[in-house]
Amino acid sequence: MTKQRSRRTVLQTLGTGLLGLSGCLETGWFPTGDRHTGPVTILAAGSLTNVLSNGLAPTLNTPVQIETHGSARIARMVADDIRHPDIVVVADTALFNAPLDPSWYSVFTSNAVVIAYNTSTEGGKRVGRAENAWYELVAEDDVDLGRTDPKADPLGYRTLFVLELAARYYDVEDLTATILADEQIYPESSLISQFETGAIDAAIAYRNMAVERGYDYIDLPDPIDLSAPEYAEDWYSTVSYTLPDRTAVQGGTISYGATARTMADDVLSVFNRLVRDASLRQHGFILHESFPNHHGHVPARIETPDHPTGRSTAERSVTRPVSQ
Image 1 (cartoon, helix red, strand yellow):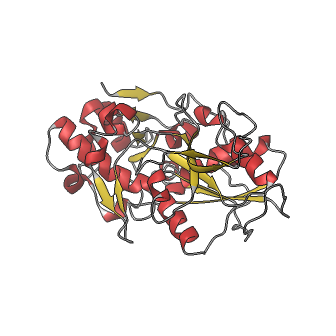
Image 2 (cartoon, rainbow, N blue to C red):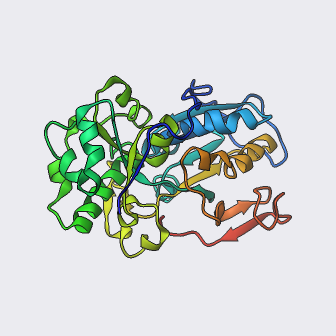
């Protein structure tokens, strides 16, 4: 059953500003145990902007500099040596298979795709009343829908996944053909803010994006919203998208991943706090008991559940999945 959430019942006081949105410093690699000059630089997925700037950063003793973009763009910026951050955080760990290829990473949170709607517009109100028939309303010409670019970030291609899965789930015709148009595309960081100007009636968004701004939204069924691990292998994985660089991304449970590119003490301290940030749940993200879980050749000082201060050995090998 599709569920609706009341407007502005959560996180009334959250801000939306960026902390240090001025580009990352070229920090390079440092020997184990060293510190480096300047703030720890974080290049992160746009949907994490608020929680990193207003949830994590104020709790740290180490200054951080945060820059956010769509995750597919982040992956290309790092792979092409355009940015050299200390920590890279993406909204889809599949990007750590290609175009990035770190020797290790940590999966630390999840999310769900929802239909956010604007109660200040007539079209938005109609979508809110639609319940399970939301897809019929957003297909109409007089309802303005917002989404993000599938070429630039995972939310964009996950929107395509959701619509394809929804068409099967509701047994209707191809929803990507009836719903999508180029003029619907907005940057991930400003998608939900379009509600404030009345530019859109509804948006296909991450749940945290609606929660952080207090916007009403429709929770989609588990087989559609990409949040339920039990549907990952046999259902979510049946959809895919090919990025402009020909990287094929397969559907799966939404998985946010992070890796540190600098082995300095202050960087690893920030990393360990980031992947265990309890404020993620308050901001609308999903925290499974298994988080954070590590993949690849994990450095000794990355905290693990059984060794909260890190392994005593040089590295810890963990089986790395093909994709998330």
